[in-house]
Amino acid sequence: DAKTTQPNSMESNEEEPVHLPCNHSTISGTDYIHWYRQLPSQGPEYVIHGLTSNVNNRMASLAIAEDRKSSTLILHRATLRDAAVYYCILRDPIGTDKLIFGTGTRLQVFP
Amino acid sequence: SQTIHQWPATLVQPVGSPLSLECTVEGTSNPNLYWYRQAAGRGLQLLFYSVGIGQISSEVPQNLSASRPQDRQFILSSKKLLLSDSGFYLCAWSGLAGFSVSSYNEQFFGPGTRLTVL
Image (cartoon, rainbow over all chains, first blue to last red; front, side, top):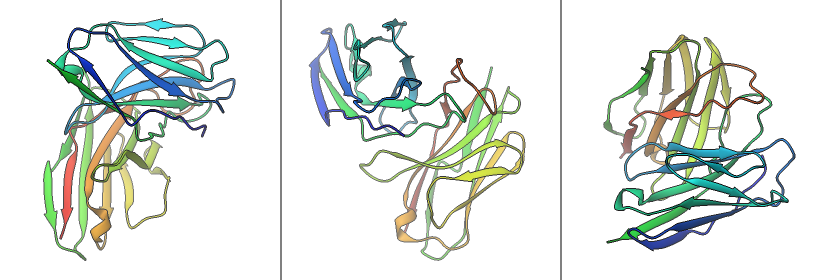
């Protein structure tokens, strides 16, 4: 499985945008980029995923570099509830739906 | 709607004792099922996944085993617990079993079991 690299931690103030980066220089042509987040003492929850084009949903936006070697999860207005560990994961759609989690980025949001 | 249950929520067990954690899914058929473990301060490690009854794949060599006796039931077991088995155990499911190419079935996680081995 291709590897992703994320900063260990980031900080933000409430109501400000947050850009969470992820490097995946060894991504293959068929790998999808997924983001999950894990709130304290809970299981992870799906945030967003994409292949080549930028994606938007009610939770966040995903900006994917043209060469696909990096991506950025964008929270447009951080809230205290967004404080969590954010995982960037590459998934090969051929085969099972298993996910290989890294260590993620711990996002702190200050009031 | 689909729901996933795990029990117990917390468990304290002595070293060398057996373990059985159960996970059940409601509201879907033929799901992919997964067991993850998260050691304190660490990321999630995939332990087992299953694409059907009796079909179990192990991701890492370990002291644990998994079984899927029914379509929506996934059990994690150990005959003798080690201290290193302590952690937060999470069960997850995703929609369609088997081969998926262009569609993505997000994984839904249960509430987890916090296991402490003393």
